[in-house]
Image (cartoon, helix red, strand yellow):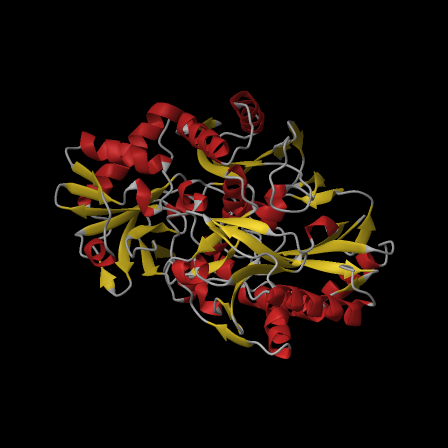
Length: 282
Length: 282
């Protein structure tokens, strides 16, 4: 079941204008969210980021329309967990790059099973040769332009890893193909800063807050690849997995999960329970 | 009229699976081609580049299918010029970045009016703050990930220019949002080399050959922004406009069109006449 054009449709096939710039030029944005029993975790943060991205790309969209389409999809979900994807495009357009004067944006909402087996599963990373372009709007916003991430992930999997670590053009650590990255050094939690070509992850922001609550100091700063790799422990975050410990990066091995990472993940689970009624990780 | 799923459809609206990774992740490629009286200029070069890109992205597609869909669309065109776009995506997929084991690619072909008024019209460029990521598959292949180009073009137009010059991560010149770039210095024609983050333009390759035919020496080499700007004349190339002289770059002005640029453009027009029956620029 999906929501397209404000209405529910069975299956994924709908009557669609293939001049949609989301399809022709990746001219759009999306959010991937965890829903528990029909309630979206960090819903306001996700919608805020999507709206901020839409403003940056000048895609005119009312929050009320996004909220209504999201609610309509949520109303169809059975009890349990789901991954909900909300996609926004600029809508149909004539040939060429020039943005149409009057956009008619497309909104699409769908759900997929939540990968429970991924919870706290340690992952191995390899550093990709594909850099994250910190000068690009695709680094700051969750646009549809995911070619680099798809290619870097495929290369990582071919190398026997679970995900790829992406450095930015300056050679500093940015993120993985699907997650923000963190390093633990004693009581200090380190993560790249916004200018390093990272998405402002909703889980990233939550984890920074949770770390402070459990008595850690947090620093958002540029981290060279060697500095990052030298940390005591590493982990990654996204809205689907919440927290995943890193067991390996290239040839290095790490304690996974590190006690501090368990603490943060447990605090995150408690926060899901507060917002959505229960902790799906339990 | 478009071709989708191997058949002709009136208008742009078709029954479409919106889990298509072209829409959700920009996981696909396209070609934009000039057709004259139903014949595509540099057709083999366009198809070759699309197939090479598909191989790089591991999208399984037979040349015969692309040829048949293209021919079907061409058969509907009235006499005259058209811009034909051939789009290939990996097809539908489950949520997530992982490439499906068995792709069912989508092929889409459409046509748009040829912008005759753009022929040899001098353009003004401004240098964008968005860099071209020379480490990315999106720089080497004509993928659907056009967010950077759309944003850089919008910024250039807001600054009163016609297009944006993109430098790569090393600060060398790459291309514009929609064209390859060339610099004329006496009898020498300079253009960035493939590793500088450029698309292997079909018109770029043709122009290098034509320049040699009219007695110029050609050099593919990395060009710093100041070296490029210091040239005697600049021009850009793509399949739609063929050649466009550059009248300005940031605060610099250039002779546009420079006599050498006219010579190259005329040789290009003659080549179109040979391949397609007549020179649409005439």
